[in-house]
Length: 508
Ligand code: NDP
Ligand code: BG6
Image (cartoon, rainbow, N blue to C red; front, side, top):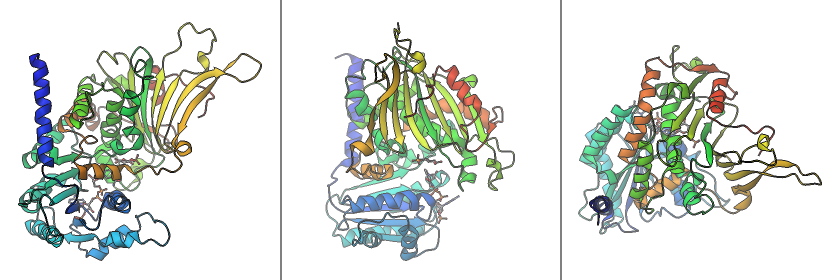
């Protein structure tokens, strides 16, 4: 065996070993405590608790083994928290009372994020639950979900480590879920990683990016690597350009203070869109082992070339600064188009256009793969459009391939049509799960595949930090655009310069 090969296998073995260690003695059933820190907040009520409820309703969380704890500074009793959440839980079939029985599983503990008494009280509450369920071998499973501003992550992790993590003689585990944004730039993300890394092992840390839990994002590897059709086409020889687009038709929607500190690149592009880019562009992993997948993601991120100023357009919607929590002189972009270039054998020369904006004319997220023109075109039909493969992440999940076909009828003329897989039409009976539902279930099962590894996060920040620094310094200024528009016209001009050819008159 070549030494490089040995090294590679050895590394994999070590990673697997760590992974396994984390899972050691974990039974499929037993005591599970889910602790939502920041339980009084926006994310907790809109996403975390509803996701837990859906898992409960589908039988993934059984009241015989699960207890849910909310922790925050706000002074509340159990019923106050339950009342706060109730309205966000989706109603089920008439006559069922899932909501009340779910809410009874929730207890609330109040305390500060650096207060040992608070975390000792939390530990006591969890232990009581474990004892009440007659704790058995391996059944102290504690999942801490940090629905909190990242500024408090280090102190909270320290408190968990010192006072509330699983120390049972019966085995089990402690896992920590952290939300984005994980840092503000390379240095702060590395510092945060270091601080949390001092307290917990990498396999215990689940960095959530909820785009990785979306149905069509999870479909990307299957689509690319289980279909012979795509294998020879998915490269620079056939693909002219690739867009990953996020659009929202509302502004910062009451989150202006948070948003202004971060901006659209940190809020959407550096994480959600870049994760999608990884799955679209990475090489085939040697297996579905989470580490093999994430190794490939890291490689592709490390192959991204420095971003050029002329391949960036920033925008800020008119009226953004009217929000009282946004400073009058804010330079924060609410729109950005950024072209990334991947320097490797597969993608050299293919622009990856990442575009995200708030307060635009529509709400959708999609991947748009545009193929090159047909050489030696005898139909003279390029003006009718190139082949495009579109993966609509939301709303109305779909995949469609735009094709040129003969216009039905007596004349020999061509027209643009499509092969269409719309999920609503094809999968009538299936309810597509919410991203958070899937990801929380993954953390309970110890599956890291859809979470961001530390080196992956570092590589992602390396790509954007120089550009973000120039924006923060005021050296790069956003162009004003009208709310409800497509964003600054310069964004479309950049798209055209990058080689994207718009099909006139075609509507899917
Ligand atoms: P919130 O601002 O609602 O904060 C959550 C809770 O944390 C609050 O209820 C408050 O609880 C406590 N808190 C707030 N500010 C501070 C502070 N400065 N110091 C200490 N505690 C504080 O945040 P969200 O729920 O919106 O977000 C939580 C995390 O999830 C963040 O990292 C966010 O970026 C991320 N996220 C949020 C999304 C959303 O849609 N809201 C979407 C994706 C990610 P109390 O005062 O009771 O202790
Ligand atoms: C969050 C961003 O991560 O994703 C928000 O902080 C954004 O600004 C949201 O609105 C979009 O998520 P989704 O799932 O609605 O596309």
